[in-house]
Length: 208
View 1 (cartoon, rainbow, N blue to C red):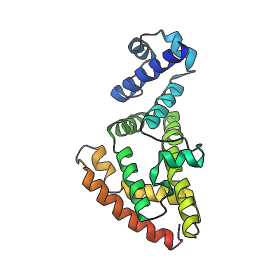
View 2: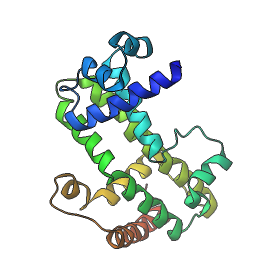
View 3: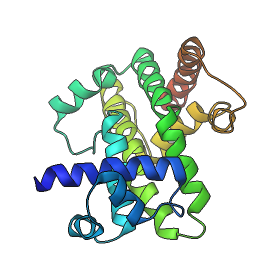
View 4: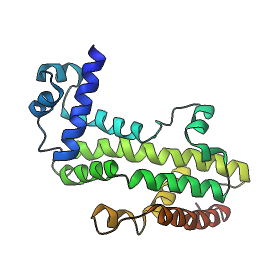
């Protein structure tokens, strides 16, 4: 029963935060939507920031993002491209990343954080930790494996993962975020392939 109530609170908070933003969402509104008391919410979450963290974790989990703590077999099962240390593997990973970062729920989450982080700095810090760092960690782990298989040296795997993401987002993310462009499947595949070829050259040159 306790776990059911916690799940109901997170689901209600998810709807409220993504629809109305962080600052415009009250604990009273979440309680009403979840059909629980405010006291029940505070029994599970210390404050609004902690509840928002739970929402971010739920959004990432439902979009197939691992915490990065999985063992190698589980990680490979979750991300089928993980064991493919080739341009094809880079392309598949890039395409999956684009599907994730351009999903409506991730875009909504990003808008919430951008809209309120200047007034609630902890919001930005938690987003960086729960969403950005967690997602980048997937590529960090992959690129470390990628370099070992190809007998290449990486100076900084975290930087390499961030560079790969930046190349994938370039020319797509902000236009989609602002509603001025829709990106279809064919465009995502072509863009991911193009970025994979460039990333291959950067990795091969061992400059990352």
